[in-house]
Length: 175
Image 1 (cartoon, helix red, strand yellow):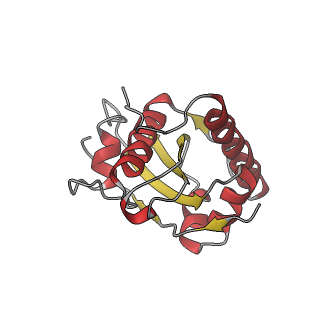
Image 2 (cartoon, rainbow, N blue to C red):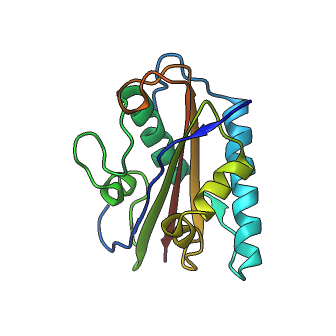
Image 3 (cartoon, rainbow, N blue to C red):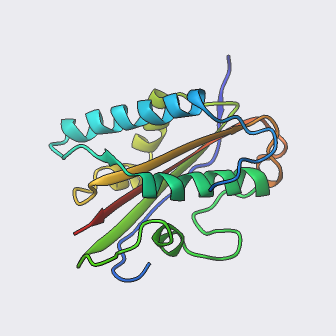
């Protein structure tokens, strides 16, 4: 099956301070996407170990932030770290993953989309081949990650009605 990998962006911002997901019509959810998410985590942790870094723990808070963003991009037809309403990714993530009583807070994000789908090895390969994505994955301070893969048979807007899989990886640390 021919795969067409489409645009992907990475951005990492360290920020100190403040700060029920709907599934779009036709979006698949459940075990297929969960399997992809778990495989991406396993592959990413293997990659981090190869570089002498600590493995990442799955965070339900970061996963909820990632799921909301992947779902929103799929249903509204955009692809960006900035939310459709203009909210920066760090402020969006902070709604789910707040600083709380900790003294240090930092988050980063990798995105990708592929048509029609992507597996964990290909997702990691795409990120490794992008200097910005690779830098985010190899940031030593990260301790937690949230992953969300959303697959839709016909995504609007930027995706041109194509069948796509969108993956959001939200990285974080609170100390």
